[in-house]
Image (tube, rainbow, N blue to C red):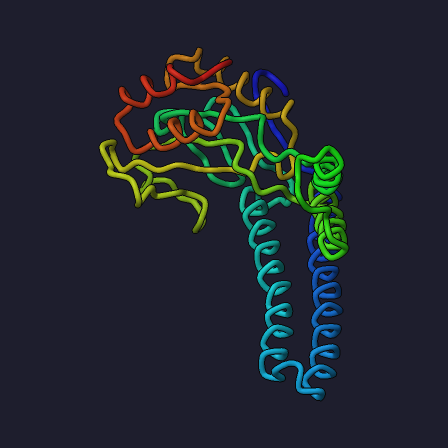
Length: 274
């Protein structure tokens, strides 16, 4: 940060690690579900030969398991592509705050076009206690069934994948939202500006930029960003701050389609810190 100008960048090594992690998790899913599908197919064919199962049904189930990793891989590619949308053409810069406005990747948002800037530091939280919690509930007679072997293996695989993505991948939770008006005047790549088509528009050509800030940057950097914007604008041009809780977050972000006066009222009720 220099002369009040804030530049937030992500090291190229961090992006390379995220790409590698997403590819690794996708590959692991193909291997695991491929093995499961093969086991089902072999066992099913054996049963079908003894007239104890329907061969077409076995094939359908095995193919069903093969579809799952394709869906998961598509989701992983989408979340990474979404995160990369907010990285500048230099392959590093994500957010710049200076006299001209807020630059997100290569897109400049002049202060006069911004209607609010809010963040949340409660995004994705990794927890590894799912299976342990189920086992403990069974031991304490709070659950009727002990986790099965299949459930245990599935949870272990899923937990390992989530843990790897959380630590090394690009998290997909939206943790920074910037409301704008005259959205059609903002020169942004496809997919960056949410046109709020599902909301009734009362504002002047409203839009919203929803950024997975935590994909590559930290909560401390998010708070630094909000503080810098507040100092730049004296907190009088548009609402700025932290929003806690899913309901309050939804209230603020949907208010982007409203007039500036209504946006101020909505934000004043729920912003917990500046």
